[in-house]
Image (cartoon, rainbow, N blue to C red; front, side, top):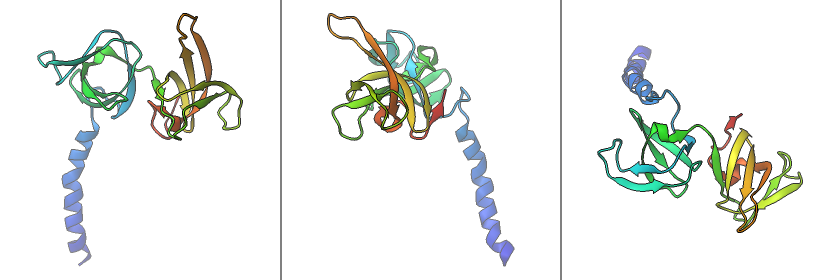
Length: 177
């Protein structure tokens, strides 16, 4: 009786296992999904994976954070912070990390902290949608650089820490250097 119960389970596992292994493989060998940035400009975002497909829109700013959600040969399907999706050539993307302040707490501003702690001093205030370069994350906090471009003034860069929960461009619990 024991073997008659296990036999269907074993058949099911052996049937599904090869499909699961193939699904985990990607042309790049890198995991999906993953965050990257745009490398150069302009970048044509297409409706399908190839130059024969129409251009949906064009990125005009290098360093824009996007999420790769699918791969086909040398083409990457990306999703931006607004949820728009399209295809770009792999050469148009960089492994550099960037993000946007998302302020999941509902606040209109978030304190950029001097250390990875909620009670650390505030270096600068950043609001939802503010772009940041992400240097590293420890699973809870990310070291970022926020650059302010005041109209008519000189840009000012502020280095500090933001909680992962207040960033679009990093996964919860993600660690990297």
